[in-house]
Length: 370
Image 1 (cartoon, rainbow, N blue to C red):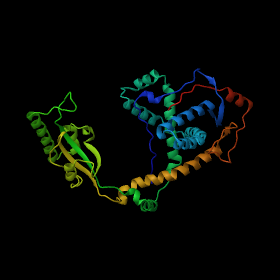
Image 2: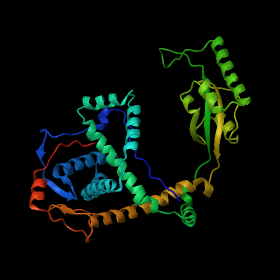
Image 3: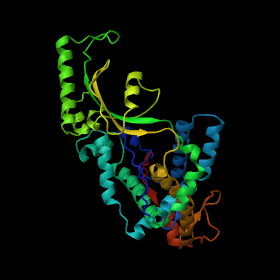
Image 4: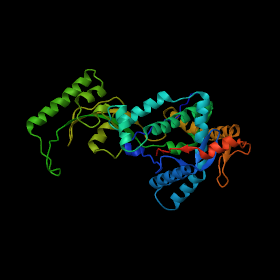
């Protein structure tokens, strides 16, 4: 059974969300907290990671006892997670995983989300904010190769059996219970006229109403003649969902105007209404899905169950894998710092005098993506 890891693609609204922090000096002698093979983790990197974690918890949970508990939990494993990252990136190098192709795709997604016309424009936007574009790309690349290593070395070995899916389905019946819903698509021909007074919109004249109705009827005629509803929506609809083929999403009973609810909940998937006059204009609705109330059949929710079981199994399997990587690596942690993922079978590295001197005097420029 094949599984794929979820892509943690972060589409950003502006380069300000790609903030980077740099030291006041161009280079400083770092205090090394951990050596992971030929890599290092510095005290300043650990402090910066802690600051990011505090901000994330505050944004997600707010303040109070719950936030304190969440922060304490994440702080306990902070150094462990940083060591995990280094081990996985180094493993990617051993396996020849570069992530170059995926990196280009991710950068292009970010470019599009920021409405920039070229990669050069993305780089200039980063530079305008004082962000090292090369360091940003390296951070993003590390995320990509980490995901690929996990999928190749761990995820590909996680299996979910039909019996496990059936058992999960039986044990979680209450969670699967849902109300009756319909998924709708629309074609809207608006009769709303521009007005300077939002509380008293201008009323369309008779000629405008007739033109709008004719346009809606032409759309319905095209559908009845065989044109796909989605194509007709893109061509005729003036609603905000037009470019998505008119898709409006799911609706429960009691969330729509009664007239529209009575019509649509009596329809089957694939059924299309006649032209309906509403306050917004003339509308044509299509029922794309109609789900009965109660527990859906197993085949409907099987993909979700399979994914849930997969990730339940993946977490302990990944922890076991990272423990093995630790046992195969040279990890040296400065006294006073704790790796909560440490294995009792780890071997502490023995450095030569020259290597020790090089590690202590290594200089770094530091930019952190957050």
